[in-house]
Length: 439
Image 1: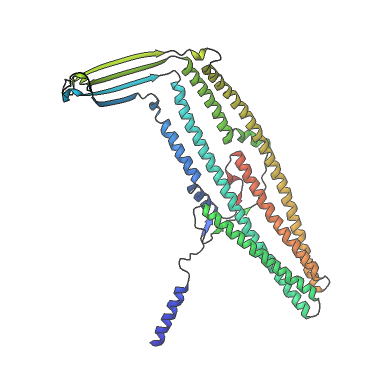
Image 2: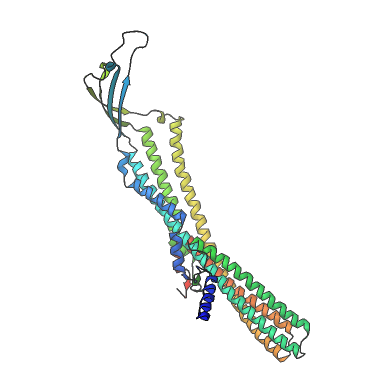
C-alpha cells in the first residue's frame, strides 16, 4: 500500500509537469481557408456596412420629397423696469406654439433619385470585387505555403542523401579508400543540409502562423495544409480573352458607371440651376398674445406658394454657369479615362498570357534539367561505389540535383501564381485556373 501511494504520487507529479492546453494540429483545406478569410476580413465587413447604408437610402427615395416639419413652443416674460405701471404677474407671462410644414420641388429631383440607385450599384460592385481579390490573395498565400512545405520535403531528401554519402565516406575512410579531406567534405555537406532544413522549417512555421492569424485562427498549434496542386498548361488566346472578359472587369464597369453618374449629375445640376423651383409652405401658430398667460388662446393659419426662377446660371461667366460647364467637362474626362483603362487592361492581359507561355517553357527546361541531374547523380553514385569516381564529384552532383529539384518546384508554383494573376485580371473564377489533386 505504501508503494502504491508513492507510485500514485509520482504519477501525479508527472502529469502536473505535462504542458496544459496543448492541442493537436488540425487540418486546413483551401476552401476552408478562403471561407475563413471572407468571414474574418475587417475591410469586407466595413464594405458590407457601407453597402447596407447605400441600400437603405436607395430603398427610401421618398425621403427626397419628404416635407420639412418643424414645431415650436415657448413662454415669454415681459415687464417694465423704470417706467410705466407695473403689470400684474399673470400679465407678464405669455405663451406661444407653432407648427410649420414646407415642401420644395425641383426639376432635377428625378435625377437625384437615379444617382442614389447608381451609388448602391457601384458600392455593390466594389464589395464583390473586394471579395474576389481577397479570395485570390488567400489562394496565393495557401499556394506559397504548400510550396514551402514541398521545399521542406526536398530539403529533407537532400539531408538524407548527404547522410547516406557521409556513411559511405566513413566506410571508405575506414577501408583506406578515401582520405580525410573527402570525409570532412561529406561531414560539412550534412551540416549544411541540416542548417538549410532548420532555417526553412522555422520560416515555414512563422509564415504559417501569420497566415492562420489572418484567418482568425490561433497560430498555435500549426495547421496541416491539406491538398496538392497539379501544374497544367493553359491554352490561352489573349485576343479572345480580351473580347470575352474586358468589358466585365470591375474597373471598367465602375468607370462606365462613373460616366453614367457624371451625366446624371450634370443633368441634375443643369435642371436645378436653370429650371424654376416650387416651394409650398403651411404654418399654424397660436398663443396668449400680449394679454398675459391668462388671456384667451388665439391661433392663426397661413400658407404660401412660391415659384423661384434662377437667372445667374444663364449668364455666361458667372459662378453658377462655370459650375455647369465643369460638370460637362467631367463627362468628357471620365470617357477619356475609360479609354485609357481599357487600353491598359488589354495590355495587362496580353502581358500575362505571354508571361504564362514563357513560364511554361521555363518549366519544361527545369524538368529536363532535373532528369539530367538525376541521371548524373545516379551514374556518379555508381561510380563512387565502384571506386571509379571521387567523392567530391558525388557531392557536386548532389548539389546540382538539389538545385534542379528546387527549380522544378519554383517554376511550377510560379506558373500557378501567374495563372491566378490572369484570373484576377479577367475577373474570372480562380478555380478554373488551378488544378487541385486533393481537397
